[in-house]
Image (cartoon, protein in one colour):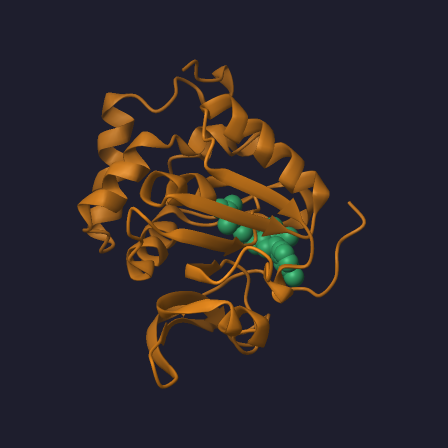
Length: 221
Ligand code: SAH
């Protein structure tokens, strides 16, 4: 794999060590998650101006006014999701594609949806370049989920909703897990883990987070 000059030297030994150290320090301890985050180079998902900051633990701007999440938040969300090797995972909010790429290392198949065609197009190019053949990218309003492909073992929402969207709850398998940030768009939100049991849904609070809002409808770009 060639690493772009854009991120100034790529994901090499020292930088990688530092990146993984930061993740562990923030509580990402699951070895499968750490291995996935070691394999996937965040520098492949950040372009232009901000590429030199790809390995810092901070969110960064991407196209269409959206953001690639902070690596430690990606790690903690992925850890909370508890993905198993045979799982089919649905992600709402492709953004840069970084989170989907990490999920692709842990699951059998990943469906990822964004409302911006601009973003899904770019993400697809990176997935192809990296040979991540178990990811399907779709442009649509993800709040309706993907009824034709469901139900899913795991659902990860990477944009904040006021409540977990009903269609997504319906598309979660019994025994399945959904992780979703809930709260008002401009206030502090809470990352919630929803577990579907035989009798209903259980909700656990994980941590305070801040995500861009889940917006209805498909975007013009
Ligand atoms: N997971 C991404 C970051 C997501 S940012 C990454 O790894 O880079 C949140 C994304 O959610 C944005 O790209 C935004 O366009 C998308 N989004 C917001 N509302 C949506 C909706 N209703 N359906 C699909 N995507 C949505």
